[in-house]
Length: 357
Image (tube, rainbow, N blue to C red):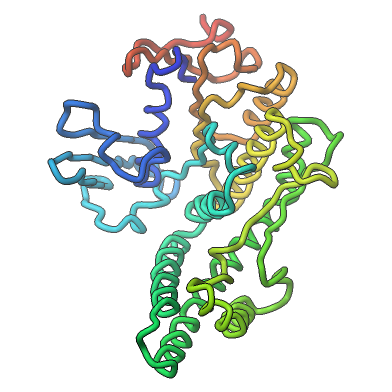
């Protein structure tokens, strides 16, 4: 448990752990802000037992700042890892931050990114599929906006890009749909455990071409792109595909984004994270590292206690932040360390009072 005043640097520790798990920051697209002001470089190192092979493993990520850019260098057991796909998954982590609450009431793009981050941790090929889809999408949109080429050449190019978009987009659509179907029951149970069973929680994937069902995703998407070509030419952009999809959460019969309180919104996102953790543990045989930033605010004491009871049941190792340890409802005797963060530095580590000899 990382505790300290606001601005003490607690979230920086979570960001360092998230960086070495995913090679990304959850706060910035640029690595520059991760390097301490006035310093040329930053280094994150994690050592521990790799349960997959039963031996000690060491992961290192180094950020080196120059005038033009900040370079990232990753090594695993002393060997340089050039591809993020080869590094990703060595340390699995699930993250919750207060910004995740914006997913519920934010833009569809934010919700799509939220789902894709979950899938990145489950299937490494999803990363390259999303990247390939975005490249194909930009290319099709350029052709849609090009008014100088001949109609025949334009149609041939559009048809070629649509084949690729349908193939790659179909895989993205299928994975997202399966993810929510896999998490649905776990999500509902986790929310009931945190918030009580008064209002049942559900989550659904929303696509402009309807529910996938038993249909073949790439065939459905290919047909939708062909049929929408005239409309897309008029708009100058691609209006159908996984880049326009969404998902929603409901409380009873009401849409959560419209009716959920702040406490309910936090419980919904945390329930999703618990469902994600359960599914990841079932998939890999081990619980991911759970990173929780300011997790207990806006939850009353009863629901906070229910949340931490669920986390103790489901989580392996968990690192969480709080401004005050008494906000965290842990039962006596649980394995926990209190770590004080002050001025960007770790000042001390101690057992909770009930665990001290």
